[in-house]
Picture 1 (cartoon, rainbow, N blue to C red):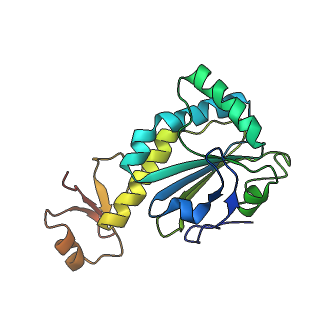
Picture 2 (picture 1 turned 45 degrees about the vertical axis):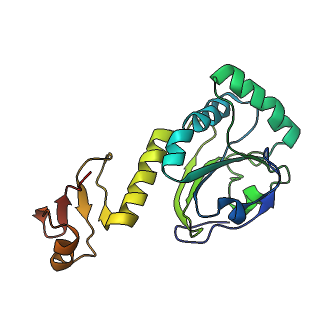
Length: 210
């Protein structure tokens, strides 16, 4: 199944390390970071899950609830959690789905048969409080994800929702942003009384107040 930006994220019910989860109900009014990892007791996944746990203050600051998935059994998750804590110094603090029947992975298109029919790729879905998919990333099993970049993308999306702006290449919080091309100059004057720099009529850079 191919999921696209703007679509409602499919709902599901599945067992997890924190009990059985009904996805939309579990999300509530939060953003969701739903990501898959290929297999338990593998080195790259061990480092990734610990990093997501370490970043809990950053997720909380952005009203984001992370949730992971693999196609391994729940008992396997419990044993692996100990390895993650002992080797990485961070215990899991978010639910990990035990999708042994691959029902959720199939629903979200996380299994790419031409890559490996037995495991999931490293898929990432950012889902907003309206349950709409706002970001989709797919990494191969061999490449660990850069969660600093994922946080940067979340900041960009949340800022754009709030302020009618877009973010330029390599943007970081605090940098200049782009006035939305959907706004006329008259509309932009109401939203950005501080003014902007018009490099071209379609490229208007503005600095937002802290």
